[in-house]
Image 1 (cartoon, rainbow, N blue to C red):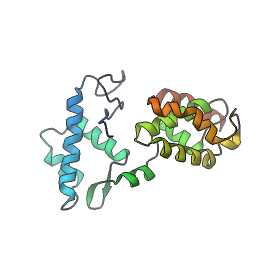
Image 2: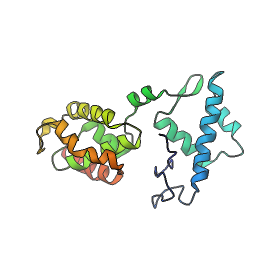
Image 3: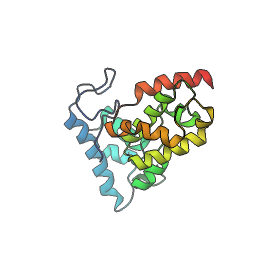
Image 4: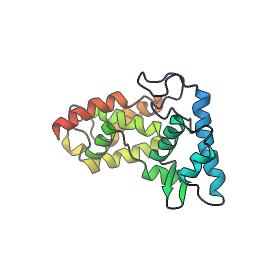
Length: 196
């Protein structure tokens, strides 16, 4: 389910982060920006693509920082992509395959892995990110098992569990409860940066 999160702090309710650019913006206005952008693009994809400039022009009476941020989020999170012909929607299965964390702390964890002393925070953050981006538990688990191997995280040791699958089984509640990732990712990334 796509919930139209705030394009800055990702909240799906009226409680924004203190430093959010859209603090105080009504939910209906945020949702309207998503609907305007998506419906305009989807209406065009039957006949062809729409360029970003044409999209801005079609919505010029409403376009502003919120619409810029919504378009940026939809592109960064692989709901839309820019091609030579213009913007186009990305199929759900393709989006899931291509999507990776891009926030600095999460990107570092995704690319370099974790080290003993921050495994709990790193895994918590990455599972939370996957849940936030629409990955179900089976998809999250599969991607995280690959992450343990690809990054060398499991080989670095420091786990009480007997396998990466056991670690993930113990963290499934993170996915089910839908916890946030930001604080845990920043704490883990600072340890990884100083260790690797």
